[in-house]
Amino acid sequence: MDFILIAVIVLGAIGLIAAVVLYVCSKRFAVYEDPRISQVNEFLPGANCGGCGFAGCGGMADALVKGADKGSLEGLNCPVGGSEVMGRVADLLGMAIANGEPKVAVVRCNGSCEHRPTTATYVGLRTCAAMHSCGAGETACGYGCLGCGDCVAACQFDAIRMNPETGLPEVDEEKCTACGACTKACPRSIIELRKKGPKGRRVYVSCVNKDKGAVSMKACKVSCIGCGKCVKECQFEAITLTGSLSYIDPDKCRLCRKCEKACPTHAIVAVNFPAPKPKPENPESPEKPDIPERPGTPGTPENLQRKEASA
Image 1 (cartoon, one colour):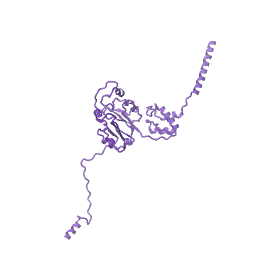
Image 2 (cartoon, one colour):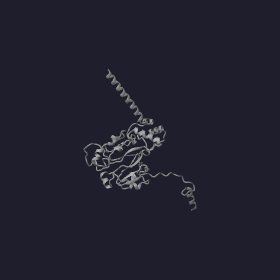
Image 3 (cartoon, one colour):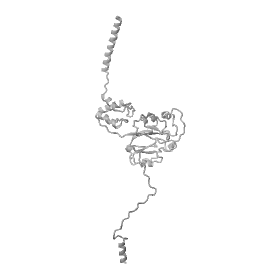
């Protein structure tokens, strides 16, 4: 019995000492967390997509609280929640936040099967990353879409689908949250986040081919050849030509579409514009209304009688 009693006392003493040590450590090395972080995190959508630039919604909530302490939320935006969620967060933190223009993912490749014929057959892991690491893929263009759908797999909102006829991804603007997951998944960086524009209208160069004109035209019929006609046509200096590739700045573009008409290869695409009104083939001249002649004007019966009398 003495041995059992001694063992119980020893174990109790060890437990008591351990409890005291843990209590001291918890107080000494305690990490304080602002209660506002959990409150902000409740407002965020919880998608953890990384579109805000942080690892998840928890990191975004922490950055928002720290930004509020510094007096500015500039550069912090939740693409999934949009202006509604950011407005609620700003109200919670007692901050004003500027509403940024909504963005949407844009596929800058128009090289469909019709314009970019297949030149090889790929056998292996059917992903864009694997195919890109092996070379140009199944076509002669080493810059265009590979068509394996890595962007589709990366999208958590079912906003991208592969078109079986063209072999290119298509973005559903209503579902796209501009989280940027598809841009990170594309190994050739052909997907770009651009401003939606007024009424969803956008003008952009649907090509990222940096080869010279003759080489790019052999690979794809609708590639940018770097002729510079769009640059000369633009009056707002919205288009820059780097090497053999043009780029339209969405901040400077005024959507006049003159560059689209000037492009000889139709590499510039205009989205969500109304269809042009058809012009009549043989427009008829409008009929002139019958205007009665006033008395005393040449050609009236009164003047004719006067002329006969004078004769």
